[in-house]
Image (cartoon, rainbow, N blue to C red; front, top):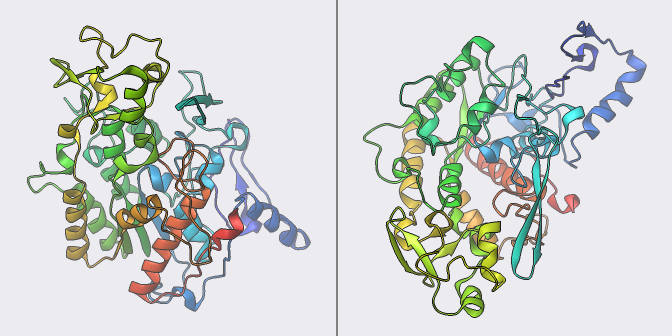
Length: 444
């Protein structure tokens, strides 16, 4: 299986590694460099205004050595899109866009190989008769097929589906996992570590091992904790670490302090209110009531009780809940067959993200690092009140709009570019850099 570690590197030393085939160093004749450089850059599919490193990065560079930018984070930074991760979504992740705007020629990502460009798969969506119909697109379907390893230095160390609660947890810790915990982030993290470390490495220890020098970093984490909690209807998952149960334990700060100790200057971001994302706002109480009448029943309190559905409830879109729009199913029509608790988010299960964002603010203040206010950015976008610096109106409608991808949660290519520009503006303002913004209207 071929595994390409994506980077813009000097083409005279460009090397592709293919397991089972002897490694070969490909030396490019000078007359071919310009042509091949153009072809390599075209793999990004993203128009951008990249410049070579120059005075634009003053404030971050310490010497004449190439600047190293490292991305730390979860699904957003990794490029999760359309409920999956695939090569094109990785390429359009905001850290890669930032790196190109900075003029970096050697920003390395753990890209899926061209032969498996669909990665772990993704979903397409259609809306019919008021319900969301998802269809799966995938190439990596065999359960025994592991994600391909990556070799060498990696600069985008973001882990899809990583939770704050798992930053310091390795798989071999006694009692580390309950049946309801997700393991998917560890499958992605294993791509970075040696075989003999597969069950003994946490994200924190991986960062400490892999980063011995850094000039600039972005830090994004926390959103998936809320997304996972709500997608499971608040059922069977602990979210307490995100809003009250810390007791002085802040693994985010440990990562940031390690990066600073290795020379890094960084930018953090806070967490948007994911419950307002389109995925969670599709199935409206009034629509359900209009089809099913006033008496729709739902479980609550760990399935121990049954109550009437009420206007404040949020229904999780799924094949299971789609029957509420057909008037032919029995689910929810009686106390004996209520909607299951994991498909209903009641008021008692809604979490205020302000507490977690206050902690992020405190970490930023302690370390003297600026914050990108994703919470306010998403709020403006969802209200339909966000126009890019180059004049493009960002459309939050779903599934037709240009900001949310088919999963109704993660951003499109345009959405990632909007986020990248917010990081760039914050970096320029705080550190005095002059990194050019992405021309987002060119992405249409």
